[in-house]
Amino acid sequence: MIRLTELRLPLGHDRAALEQAIVERLDIAPDALEGFEIFRRGHDARRRGRVVMVYTIDCRVRDADVVLAAHAQDRNVVVAPDTRYRMCIDDGARLATRLGYSRPVVVGAGPCGLMAALVLAQMGLRPIIVERGKVVRERTVDTFALWRKSVLNPESNVQFGEGGAGTFSDGKLYSQVSDPRHYGRKVLEEFVRAGAPEEILYISHPHVGTFRLVSMVEHIRAQIEALGGEYRFDAHVDELLIDVAADGARHVTGVRLGDGQVIAATHVILAIGHSARDTFARLHASGVEMVAKPFSIGVRIEHPQSVIDVARYGTRTPDPVVGAADYRLVHHASNGRAVYSFCMCPGGTVVAATSEEGQVVTNGMSQYSRAERNANAGIVVGVTPDVDYPGGPLAGIAFQRHWERQAFLAGGGRYFAPAQTVGDFLAGRASTSLGDVVPSYRPGVTPTDLAACLPDFVVAALREALPAFERKLEGFAMADAVMTGVETRTSSPLRILRGVDGQSVNTGGLYPAGEGAGYAGGILSAGIDGIRMAEAVALSLAGRPVDGLVRKGMVQASEAR
Image 1 (cartoon, rainbow, N blue to C red):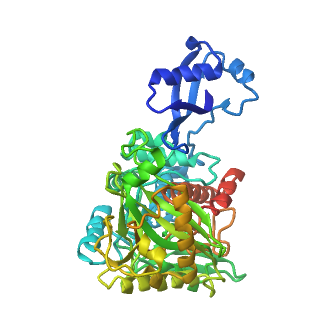
Image 2: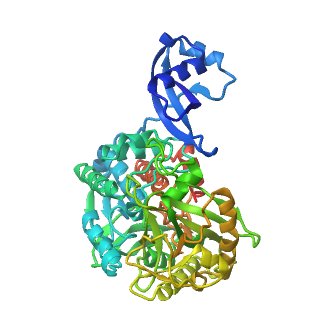
């Protein structure tokens, strides 16, 4: 197979035009093209009103070696890589029987935990999945109770429960982490088997939306259980059991649940998500090594989706192939802070995402159709340990909680969120009413001054960034655009340190994983990290070394978001 990249065609072309473009780029006779598949399809909208489709194509051609030799200097014509997933061990069931080992435990059933458990199950290692929240359908009922009735269940909400925080999001399935073994392809293929549309395998910025994710999560659970895996829901891990040897070496022996039950385990994958603050505190108290890390805080901003479509595409009616327009914006403020758009949701809604009583947190969500009236995105400012929140590994959590509490108070209680128009925010005055842009956040918003629930340096950076973003995207600083606070859960405020073998640097058998441990940033990268940790566990059980490519992936994953 030959891979052809950066193949550009006008919007609205047909398949014949694509085939002709392939033949012309490779300079071959039409009958020499034996077949082709679209590996990636994206679009370039940098020139307003002139959207161009951009393809990566895998081709089968006659005399492929000759064609490759003729294009040896063209970096856009190469041998197509083999993206098939191969298990790192093929004797998991026999290994389990021979060793009589304790089953691996996966703590957390978000994207990372699900993929870790699925791969372990596919290897025959029969994992036990421990999830503090409920099954996804029951969790959905609890989540809607907050949105519709201002009733919060601290153990079952946007953050906690089967599927993790990604279930109530845009369902974005792309990432910028290093992926030398194509684990991302494995994640996407498993999602398609679970009911995601096949197009996620080839569009450049795939998403599935909340409702599809719910049924996909259920399907993955069924697969894991059919392969011998076991779920424990409403099962809060209260203690990590650790044996300390005479020489001081520490190793996991199991977990104790909230009801007192002990699950013996020598291998525990910790995929708890970035909001498991009580678990972080317990791990820190037990001596698991962790450090504070940077993250970002800010607000959600909403515009009419039509404003974004016109600014990006030059039309209010986007082509169905490219869909509702999105954006990515960055500004480096004069106070030294980076301001950037985060988790942009075309045609979506702003949602209540708190997991603790008396606090307000926002996030963005959209369905597969992306057909809601507003576009929304986090507009956030980077914060750093020591400078902004001194005090050790848990200081970032205290920092988040403070501003979430301020947002709850500014919203007037009942989990209403504070909101302000962009015009009022830039003028430095509190909003007493809102304009034409109707905020989508539920249970509701309270017009106020967002400066009361954000650090001064964040307010200053945002006030500088909004006009700068207007220069890049016309209409962005429109007076009636609505800002809703606060966005604090952009990424984990800490990192649980692990070595090249995937294990905690000071607690053997503990495998910190995913977004909560500081090694991922989103659904796809979390799933990729789950596969890495599943392989690390399997190799450890088999007494085999973690090879270089897996080590490379583990190290580079730590740089995600």
